Every structure is written in C-alpha cells, then in structure tokens.
Image 1 (spheres, rainbow, N blue to C red):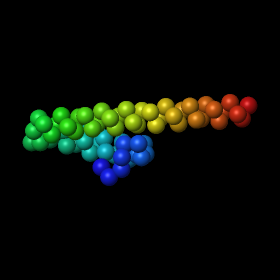
Image 2: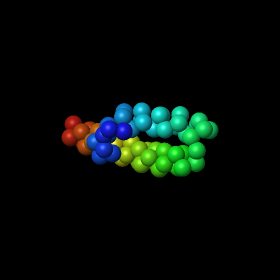
Image 3: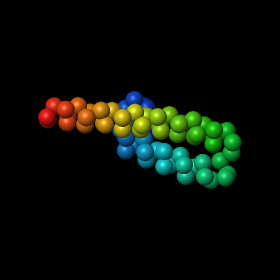
Image 4: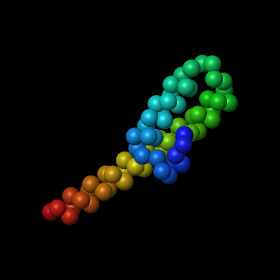
Length: 67
C-alpha cells in the first residue's frame, strides 16, 4: 500500500480490502500474516466507513442548502 491511510480514497480502500480478503482466504499464508492482514483490513474498513459517512453528511448539507 503506497498511500497512507489518510490519503486513501474510498475506491482504493475497497480495492485493498478485496486484495486482503483474497490473501486471507488462501490457507498457505500462515497465522502471523493472516493476523497482520486482518488488522490492516479492519483499519481500511473503518476508513471506508468514515468516507461514506462524510459523503452522506456532505450530501445532506447540500440538500439543505438547495431548499
């Protein structure tokens, strides 16, 4: 992952989550690597959720201004 967590777009976070899911599903990566990937995935999921929440709030503000 070349971008820092704060710089990630929703799309980049989602793409990395998909990569992590694929890697974890492989049974040959070992427990330590699985745990490391799980932790990264958890952070990415929280980041994606925050981005969605911010987008929702932004749309709500926009809609209030249009009325």
